[in-house]
Length: 524
Image (cartoon, rainbow, N blue to C red; front, side, top):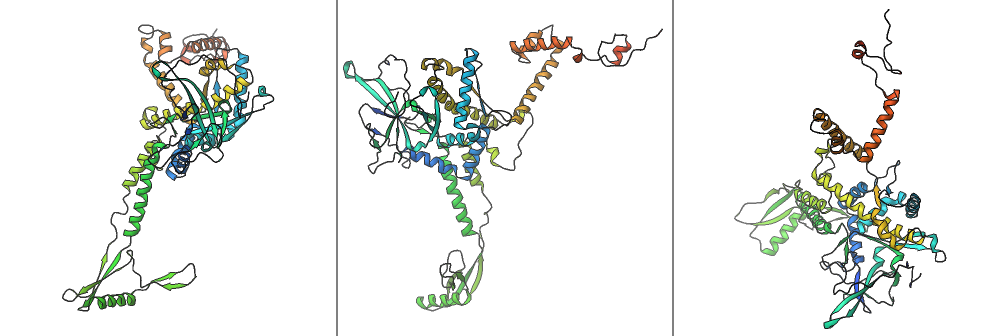
């Protein structure tokens, strides 16, 4: 079972792939190398990011910025909803065509995987790591002496220390053309990470001199599904926000510098120096400045208070000489900046940053009220944001798929050949925000009942009851059978029968047995 390090699940010997001159599409950012070659991982992103580890470090540094942290927190809170009455994520096997005992074993193993992951306790942190880093690595630890016992531990691995490698094997065919005959996948782990060298490359050989070669089945690898333009590096969902964030930082720094330098109102002293020579005029100006200026400064190193009146900075008063023949000594004021309160540029780049993160810009303003009204009043940005969260959940659910695959195969519940059929029937249902889901369902039901009421005059003439139930109330075949059964049971149960109105009683209609109402007095 073991191959260098870790375990390898034995699969049925597959036929050799059809020869092709192009390798399969690389969607996981693995390093593609030739057989027997050296594995280079030099990637240049605008001259600043050269390895996958540096990219992950950049994402984590971005996540500490207040605006990014606020947006990421919004996204994770929408995707992971903690409800004390429901599980954060549940497995739906309604589409799986298997006996109930098989379904029960699969659900039990799914709960075991969640328990080992401690998902109910740390769902927020796990999802946030995956979203910020753009990838997740877990080491699938089993008992080598008893692999049938399945998973013992899922140990998190820093993505900066792990790299996936695809070794492409080629062979020569007619006309001396090289075609891809086979692809071997494995992982390389280095405790020090894979850093670039002075020459601009980072190499690790197949012999594992600087890293450990790990079998593919021992690692659970979940990515964001996004790759760079070259297709050789996985990027995260924060990648689009790198440029807007840098622009926002620069704009904020420039705004602070401008406000500090233009905020104070300064004085301009025009000193009449007469016909004094240049050197004596400058000395006279300094004497006047020292005489009328008093600047006491506290020295934090010595604890003394010293006089710095002989120094002049751009944030203080201006002392300018004036020659004879012009005006005499004069003191005027230089007003401070008049547009210091304008931050339109900052707001513009904040909006750009939120758009890059797919977060509605309406959430940028903390004073904006969130609308809980009709569904037709929800903005398009909120609808797009909801669809974005759905896509994130579907991609993140691959973590459970890959863990379940190895767990079910190791325990002998299914075979590796069965997994291709089983995985398409697995549906992961994440908990929704109960308040908003309830408002939405109530709104939908209200509209359907209103439409059915408007069509009541046409039922039996232009529309059948079954058509209305299918196309207006959207009841399925199972729903209609269950509802008809309940209606029949309620008709036979006096508890659900409505009492007669006073008009019906006055018309002489008999009171139904067991119904509340006024006692009928007999007349002789």
